[in-house]
Amino acid sequence: MKHTIIGVVLGAIISFLLGILILPVMSLKFVGAILLIIVFAAIITVVGYIGVYDKKSSKLPVIIGSAIFLLSVGYLIIGGIASSAIFNAGTKQKMLDVEEVVFDETVPNVDMENLIIWDESDAIRFGEKLITEKDPSLGSMYSISEEYGTLSVIEGKPFWLFPLEHSSFFKYIKNKSIPGYIKVNATTGKAEFVDTEFSVAPSAFFSNDLKRVVYSKYKNYGLTDYSFEEDTEGNPKWVITAYTHKTGFSTKDVKGVVIVDPVTKDVEFYKKGEQPEWVDRVTSAKIFYEQLTYWGKYINGWWNPSDTGKLKNTESIGYVFKDGNVYFYTGITSYGGDEATTGFLIYNPRTSEANYNRISGSTEQKAMGLMEELVQNAGYTAKYPYLININGEPTYLSTLKGNSGNVVGYALCSVKNYRAVAWGKTLREAQTEYNRILITEGNNTNALSDQFDSFDHSSGIVSRVGVFKEGYFLIKIEGNDTLFVVSADQYPLVALTEKGDQVVITYIQTEETNKIDAIEFKNSSIK
Image 1: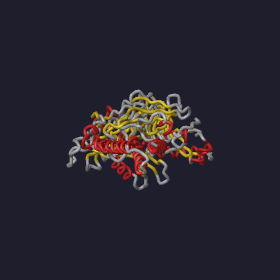
Image 2 (image 1 turned 60 degrees about the vertical axis):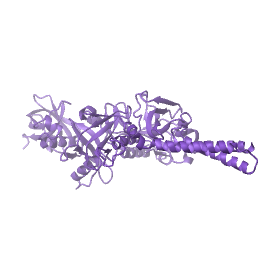
Image 3 (image 1 turned 120 degrees about the vertical axis):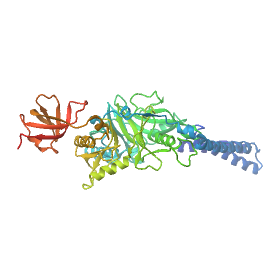
Image 4 (image 1 turned 30 degrees about the vertical axis):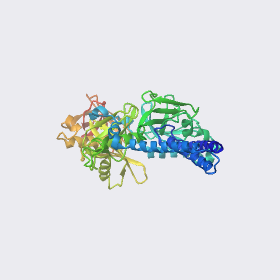
């Protein structure tokens, strides 16, 4: 009896300590909980066996412990087999519900005022510069959290949010709390430090450790993607994806999100589809990637040695900003087709809706190579591109960076037409040149040449001229309500243009705005 009590108590203590250390999901759909049971049963069995060997205890604890141990190991083996795609390829493949759609329906025409131009590395650089300017001592106490940075939507605009984190355990002991977080506009690159003190974070310890705060209330879910977001009132929140397993110990199935207030420590679970409107993602990028892999790999079942019909995503996952939401996107290619896509898939991480656009063209990596070829003499490098829609033409947009890492220009490349590649020092300049190339290509090879057989021309006397933005002028011609935007870099004579001058402007007429970019500008009054 003595050894039985010792075995149970010792097993419970060790299992409890292991649980505190590794935070296993307390569900039979996860391996961690089963391993704790195995440890507990093994200790009871070993201690009980010692008692039997010393002839001081009955064999009952050994029998019970051994039975629990063997049953648990058997459960692990069966669960492992049940996790295999051999038996569950169909279930795994259907985890991603994909609908085939038309490109224009999933990616609206580009909004140049709300493009995701600055990537995560740029935003971190802006944030570090801001911290140095604000208070140099902050940099020695805290660092910008790259792992938990989030591309979020705030008041209809894309922002990068980065919580600060404690630099070390001893810095945490000294400071206890974090003074705020970094907010960077993904379109303009403007960085802001938000002075909101909070204590709950992944870099904190003990009762302020984010993972332990969540685990204390929701032990029965797998938790991933600890995203830092803002609610509609501007309060910081941690948003964590909660999931279980669909087949054995595999195939993640998202059930909802856990939202943590880092100031008050309030923890709340929301079922998928019932989360607050401000939550930008319910399904994490990692789970999307897993489901996307299953969808393409098992499209014709598990046994497919010839890879017939198999699809895979291109190397990375990018972003699309539309309708006030951030979407994941990736190119889709067939097995063996590394440089050409069969289409691309756009995924809503809030609703789990996936739309497949069957458009053949270049991969993101191929497009980056074409962009860099265009500026090879300058030695610029292209960053991973974003997918945008320019008048119905699926287009990759990338920032070009010099040796210093600073953005020196922008490049656009058609997904469908390898020859349609353009760059400019400004985004407007790049788009103007890109539109010109698309029209010049003609022969119905792209969306623009389908819409426009040729350029439009407007000639007349200048009635108004003024500065639009740095390097750009607005020109108004008598009898024409359109305002033409002309680049001074491309057409220096526009800076000398005056009211009364005779001009000819070449352009593409669109219905999007009354401000039209000039494809070509001539001033016959200046000799």
